[in-house]
Image (cartoon, helix red, strand yellow):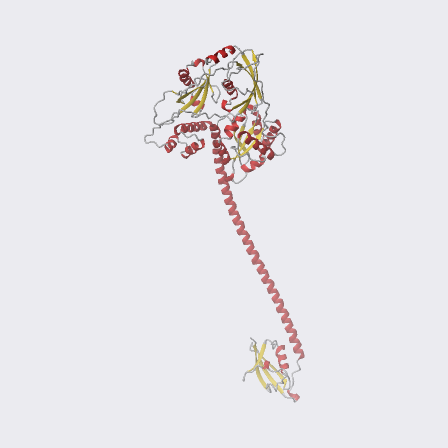
Length: 621
């Protein structure tokens, strides 16, 4: 997404929150998206207006929502008297607390929204235990704030240093709108050229010490860095903490100190007690060191990530993104290579304990509810600690293998104070692409906008992938259906062929049986024919019976038999002509008699087939 588009949306989001009073970023973004980022439509949807005029109400109390993490530990050790430095640190004294008096700059009446509604910004400004509230439009400048404070605090603008800006020191001509500030802000005033006022007893003590400076050695444990700073003897502990806040960007309320005397308070002077040798009384120190986020040279990436997650929770609490436990390759597989609808972006968080931004980024960005929720829903989050060179070299090797040398070279170009980094990686058809590299010096709003920008690019690509995947699955479904139909066709052909083969085999078998039966019948016929007695002649003098037999085909068989011949001979004769008695019955015409049922031992005379008879053959049922 183009930077101008991101900037426009940041402005719209800021205006929407200012007009509606909705502080929850995720809720505000959801409402804007429902109205396609139309500011007027979104505002009217939340606060319906009859005439289009928006009324702005601002609380007299404005709370700080700075981008800094949980308490950063520092320690004060052995301040030693020294010569005054060339540039003295800012100094102030504790004055009796006074009631807060809000100061408002004149603002124009509410007007119809055409393109952009001016935002009202609230500032709580602290000066020497006095709190002043200033409310003015974001079109105003830093100089306008100083002019209001000049009236309220009776401090000349030329001697006033306005501190606490998230973007560092700003000039008086800087327009507040260009700083992209939240609705509520906290600042404080330093006046190093103005001697602090105090009560009589405290003032006399300060006057005795005002000409003396001391060296305070401060050890910042998380950054593993020591500062040797010169402070006037009249400086209070609260002012020292504010100076350290300017130096480290860690708000006073998030600082934790060791080494001050048990009786010391924020109102105590740096040298409110000293020994005869004029040495400071505060010489106590602590050598506590936090455990590394990730062990060095861990053999298993999963074990290293388990240690990272446990240490992250110990330092910053349990409200943080769910870090993927496993190798970078496994995280890439989980994010990029599932179904298109299930794919996600890969967020690679690179931590470095040597960067002063790490504590802020982890506690305020990575643990913000909106960021945690958004990452959990749309990203696979994988983390690695590059504090140790061995772990950093291992990461570069993994990035080169999975994303190419360009990504590894990009990580090499970032300096320690630019960490931590959040790499947003999107899986593509041919290669994986790094959409964005988010550095540690960002805000929750900017981080959310950049994550949303990456999601817009990913969503567009995902829709194309889903379309391609659906089309591919539809083609594959058609092909599977065609393959199934072809398989069924082949199966039907195979079964048909097998049935035909079985039928043909059965026909062959039946034909073989038929031939065998015919051969058997023919053999029996020939045997019977050869066994028949010769046909008798009439000249022989013996009684002869002349028989005429009609076959089923209409032909007649004629033969002479001796009257004494048995019926079995007649049956054998008929069988020798192809009409066996088990298949055919031999009948007389009138009266109708079944000769085959008569005892075959009878003679023709006994069977009354003498001297002549006409018979016919009929197939048995």
